[in-house]
Length: 164
Image (cartoon, rainbow, N blue to C red; front, side, top):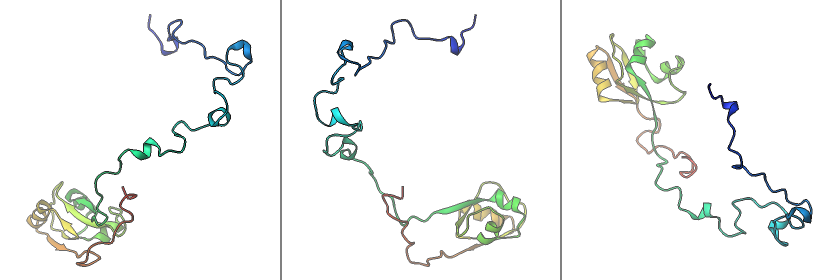
């Protein structure tokens, strides 16, 4: 005989019936129904985390530790095997965007996963050393594109605390 999930039930007496309050004095939960006398808890509903107006525990404990650099430069990686499959002879961020391989306006970094079997002219904002060596070894060329903001620092990405 196998036990099925719908045959399972708790042992007898392990789950007592809930006490029904507010049903008159005969049920031992009448009148105030376990809410005490007067006050906020006796009248309306109080959220479980509410602490009577003092600074709640959730806000007292330390949080948001560390540091998020608002000037971090994020690149979108493109691997050599993706370049190989694209069949492009000249690879640039715009060409990759038209093929649907990167987002619009993304800064592109070429990474070294996979291998190239044909010469390709690659223009990107960054190259890993291994990717650069693989492109040159396959007979291609590498051109480093300037960042859109020049040699100044990049624009900040919103509030550092909300941008996590």
